[in-house]
Amino acid sequence: MLTNISNVLRACAQRNGSVALVSARTYADFTTEASFEIKKCDIHKFEEAPATEVVMTRDEGLKYYRVMQTIRRMELKADQLYKQKIIRGFCHLYDGQEACAVGIEAGINLSDHLITAYRAHGYTYTRGGTVKQIMSELTGRKGGIAKGKGGSMHMYTKNFYGGNGIVGAQVPLGAGVALACQYLENNQVSVSLYGDGAANQGQIFETYNMAALWKLPAIFICENNRYGMGTSVERSAASTDYYKRGDYIPGLRVDGMDVLCVREATKFAADHCRAGKGPVLMELQTYRYHGHSMSDPGVSYRTREEIQEVRGKSDPISLLKDRMLSNNMASIEELKEIDVSVRKEIEDAAQFATTDPEPPLEELCNHIFNDNSPMEVRGVNPWTKLKSVS
Image (tube, rainbow, N blue to C red):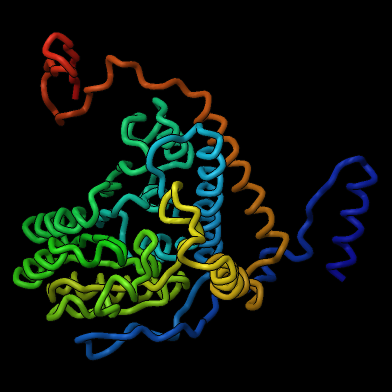
C-alpha cells in the first residue's frame, strides 16, 4: 500500500515538471537499533577480548555512513585536484581506510587526544575540521585549517596534533600527550597512530618502554594497510604480528575494515587506559585503495585484481550499508540522499578551495609562538624582516 502511494506521488511530481525523491517508508517504519555479530579480535596479554555481539542504533549507523562517505568523496576530489595540478607537493590519500578513523572516533571522546602521521585528512575531519577547511588547506589557501601554510601533511584542530611528516616521530609526541593527561589527572587518553611501514622505527619501541614503565593512558594504533610505501609487510618485518610488539603491553588485532569492530576495540582499549592499567597496542588490518602517495600508482607491487577483490569483499562503506539495509535501519533512497548531499558538500568545498585567496606574504611567519608579543623573524637573508604575530 505504501509503495503504491509513493508511486502515485512520484508520478504527480514528474507530471508537474519536477523530479521528487519520495521514500516508500516513514522513519517510524525503520528499526531504531539492531545487534550485530562482529569478528573476534586476536588478543595479546588480555584475559578477555572486546565483545563480539554489539548494538548499533539507526542514528549511529547513518552518522557513520555519512562521515565515511564524506571522507571517501573528499579524497577522490583531492585526487582529481592533484592531477589538475591545483594541489601540489606531498599528498597521501585515505580512501579504503575510513572505518579506522570513524571507528576510533566513535570509541573515544572529543576531549581525548589524537595524533597521526601524514595520511591525515580523514582524522582532521573526524576530529572536527570541516571539508571546506581541509580542501582549502590542500590548495594552500587562506581559509585552510592551518591558514594554508601546512598543506596535506600538517593539519591541526582542537585535541588533534597532526599530520606529521617524519616517519614514526608522532608516536613519542603522543606519549608526551598521554603523560600530560596522567599528570593533569583529567581521565583523558591519547591515541597515537602509525603505519606498518613506521612500525620498525626504533623510537616507537623506546616509546612503548616508557609508556609501560609509567602506565601512561596511551593507545598505540598501527594501521596495517599491508604495504609500507611499496613494500609488503612480509618483506619488511620479521614478525607481522604488530599487536604483539609491545611485549609487556597488552594488544589487540582488529578487523580495520569494519567500523563496529574498530569502535568496540577502541572503547575496550580506552576503558583499560582510563582504569589506570597503562597503555594498549592495537593493530587495525586495513587497506588503502590509492598508492602510498600521489607519486605512486599503486599497481607495481600489487595487482589491480587484488585491489578490486578487497573493494568487492571488504569495502567498509559497503559493509555498513549492507548491514543497515538488511536490518531495516535505512532505505536505499535515504542513503542515496546522503550520497547526493555529500557530493554537493564536496563540490562546494572544492569551489571555495580553488577561489579563496592565498595567504599574503606578510602573514608567512605568524603563529610561530602562542601568546607572544609581535617579533621580527629573519627571512632567507639577514636583510629580509618579517613579523610574527601570535
